[in-house]
Image (cartoon, rainbow, N blue to C red; front, side):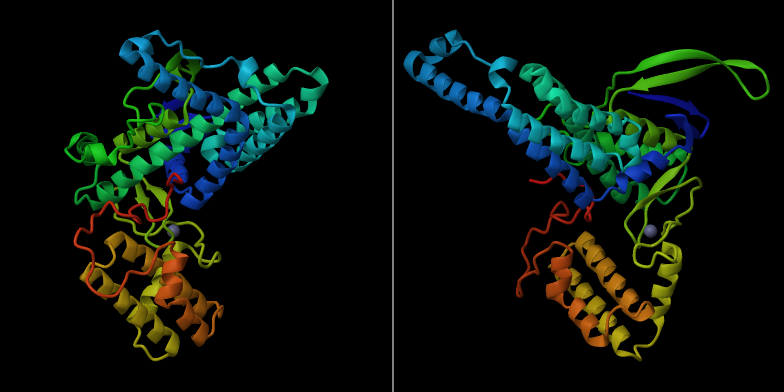
Length: 410
Ligand SMILES: [Zn+2]
């Protein structure tokens, strides 16, 4: 549970006051790789905890098929589905121990990110470690199972929420918000209304039919506390505190309230992270340390890169880089790669060229190697397109749309 209060263009949560939009920008910047690491760690616990449940589900399905074959629909109606009790489903101590270790590790990984810190993942990690310590002493397998299961559900809900929010809002930012010509609160909100309601909404808003819990929800449960409070000038006001149970709701509240006070969330063209801008500027680069060169901001790195591109190709490194960009532009024109894929490849190429030129990280030959199609595609997690005619249907929804950001592993 997180206690939240909104005052003007700020959000107060967990005792800290932040500009609206900062929390969502940080959450959106969690990369696909980082997300997968947390998700994988959780999935290891899943198999250990619920093996008995999955086995039982298999048996039940077979029994139901038999009941249907023997007695038709009437036979199936009479069939009593056995969902299993905790006593039947709880695994042994070795599995419980191992599962709780994986979950404690997942909570530890999650607690590095602000959004999960706000939901006290460290206390969950503590609970799991304590439970493991005392499990065999108290010798109560069922209670141990119940506690670990509860922690598992919390972790899974939080991760699913991050996935749903990021995947949905990422599309909104890249394809709608950042394309706006006029930039003010009303335009942002209109863009959001179109995004969630127009004919394309069904493919943009994450709403899988088969997993009812993994939705981008349009309704959220809210507890509100009306709290009398003295302000700085000595007057008394009723402050509205929201008690929020889900990561998704906190993110939506922060993001949508940010839009309504005229804050934008933009994506940095250099590092791909998201950042908040309080005014309607078309800022391209984030003001934080560049992952390419930590001593410079993305803005400074971009300026240097621009100079490098504009300079005549009088050295082998610039030549290599320019050739690579020409190649990628041609690939895009031929339809072998999408705009998003090109962006990702150019970003990677620029990173190598920058590090070779300004940080002496690669020799001329090494840079040429790094910029080769084979290496560049592999580094971006893509297969190099086959030579010859490109595929006819190059939908914008193909891989790479999310540009390496949060994506649930298959
Ligand atoms: Zn940046």
